[in-house]
Image (cartoon, rainbow, N blue to C red; front, side, top):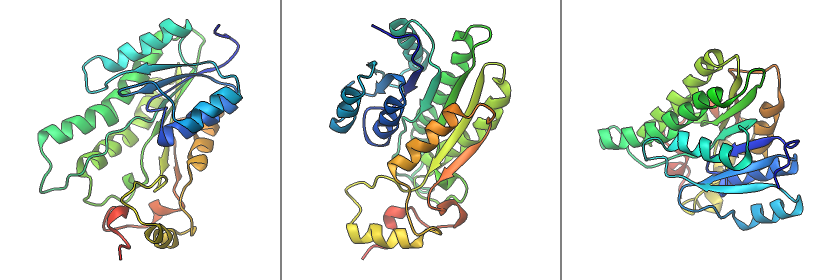
Length: 257
């Protein structure tokens, strides 16, 4: 049975990788959880263990954000299941494919803009119409430290994240009667299998703080902004200081041996 005294969070891409860490931290904080997945609604093993340990109220929702109307349909499905609108939406789901100035085409750019910018924007604006008078919710968008000092790699991805980052202040103002809208900009946090252990050590040494961001660092920042009642329109860079340095390439291409 749904407990209406628990705050409800919708986390897109919330079942695996960074999204799972964010979902787990919210579960530890007592949130009920609507967890979105692209093709299935099965949490990874670590998240499943956390959800069980905290007797979490949660449900999974499968939505393909490349489909028209998917964002609004997801929000309505969550409200239909829990009987109320979310108190928090974490826009974490993301598309990350490689292109550059020589390979970018309309299709790639359109796909990245739709999933990385349009879907979070629609979820944010749609949430305002689902809240009753006097209710106020929070939105936290996961962006990327590269929006501050971009390079030419993953160009469609970068442009879409820059658009999302710039939308935060605009939406914070446009929706200020119902929402607080903020962002978290991670640095290199969970490497793919393409990275080598020694490479990660060398990349760590390049950061101003001599460390990379951890999943827990990002989850902690999301939880802070979720509860920070006087903060809106802000983006918190959680990246070991990477945004203060201009890198010529994406991290995957740096410090290779």
